[in-house]
Image (cartoon, rainbow, N blue to C red; front, side, top):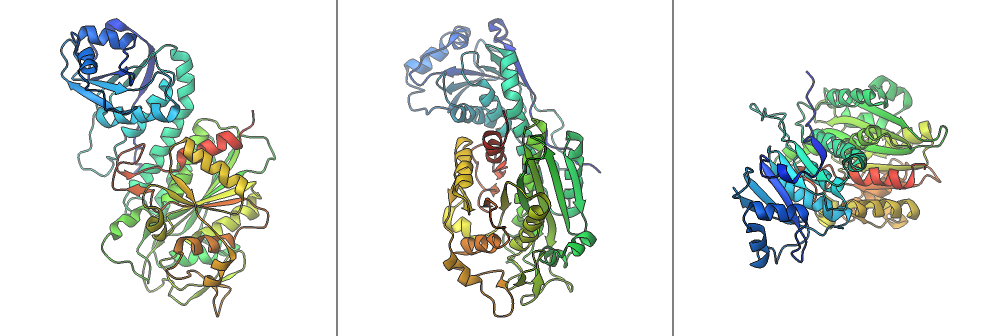
Length: 495
């Protein structure tokens, strides 16, 4: 049975109709500058509410508000709407601030329709994206999900056609974020490796070319590292490959590689029971890759990008990999498995090598909820960034900053390799507690070919969070889809 994707709230861009404000249902959003200036629609709202808006300004109710923040008048006189949301925002606010204001409105929206009086704003499309991103609700596993459709977001602007064109790729990216959030939110009994692969296969309808590698083919390719992770599970291991070739024919693609451990018990190195339920999100890297590929396809990106995700389940059983086992990677290197809970790097190693052998990419970025150590270092605010290439890394960091997605570069170096030495194999899969995130990155670097620009993103702290992230409700954040899309748009798309 197909699980419906969480829908975006419908967005409509219209000309400003001052006479329609009084009868608007649900919520009405109006904008006031930090110094208290009312624009044309705000002045009409002020007249309709018999000066209530001006009194808010004059009596200092907005004085301590930061740009992008909202104060609400409930059941305002003179309006049929149940709420008037007053947004503090400069008319020429930058994209991030406009989106922040939209996020604040989206948090209040619930299922209500919203009329946004944005005709004087410079970036209404970014504002609309913010509303949509924050209005996300994962309802798929509730016995009585909300049956009413999300209320329409009507944005009154000065040029609806131009704004609609500007907003289209932004809303395509929001759809990619929603896909990632849906995948990360799903419980493991619903999002099996087979179901994950099926959802990716469905994206062929968007123009993606999708190939699913099954265990027999992976065995022929020598993917002993990846297969060792899933051999204790009844769910078959798979690799899903997504190709989007929207750029110049023959140009080497950018490769995105994701860890897709649909549930991680730790294997024989069993995790503590407390908090293990959160390990449904251990496929977060694969979720970001899938969501990014959806966004690129939806907006018809003029770039060549391939997304590859290793889909496995790490379970303890009589067939599971044991600590002390030695497995052989597709590259041919042998790995002594010291801890079966350090499984993500084994999955990535084989998928990364396959990506390079198959596509000879212009660059490669892997994403994984890889280490708890990165949370100790960076908390839940920033992902850890590791790279062998300064230019590519700096481009990604700029893209992440432009999209408001926290990222921080971490060090690498040969000295850390000493911690991975094995007496009986080419390497161990862990290097001990010190510098755990760095030794994990050093492990992965061994599967990066000479001359291939590469970034490793450890997203363990940002994939799913307990408090509201910048662009959505608590839970699955969708972190990375917007930054990767921006990187592709800025650096890999032709004119």
